[in-house]
Length: 158
Image 1 (cartoon, rainbow, N blue to C red):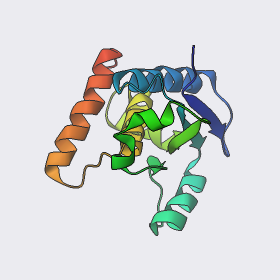
Image 2: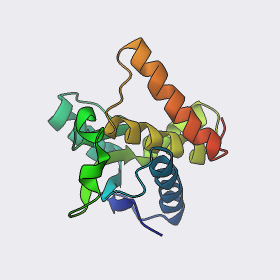
Image 3: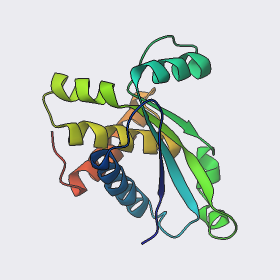
Image 4: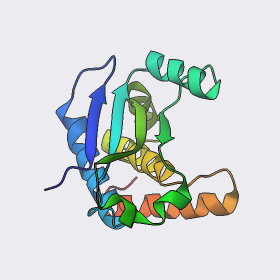
């Protein structure tokens, strides 16, 4: 089976539960978006609050912790013609950085499982890499529908 994911850990221990969730979610995202036959992958970095705050400050000039950051490598229009990724070397779709302590906190705050919260962070980050956003209300509706579709198909509910 093709692997669509590379995992990295900064200031946090490797964790088999996190790995399993990430693989399952990214695999479903790739299959739903028909990316399973192209030479791209997602890089997910699990980290702590200090590191995500540092990255948020450096790249977004926001000096505070957050739950997830996404750094796409392509513009949305570049992803519309996926045939360019069928040949040649493997390319990274982008990086998703997730603060595990924030995920744990939000799972408690929103009264749902850690699996659901981490899965949502991964799906959310993935769709940012695909060029979707939630600043404009209409775009937000499209993005949320895609996110919920993935979670529903994975049978991960609130």
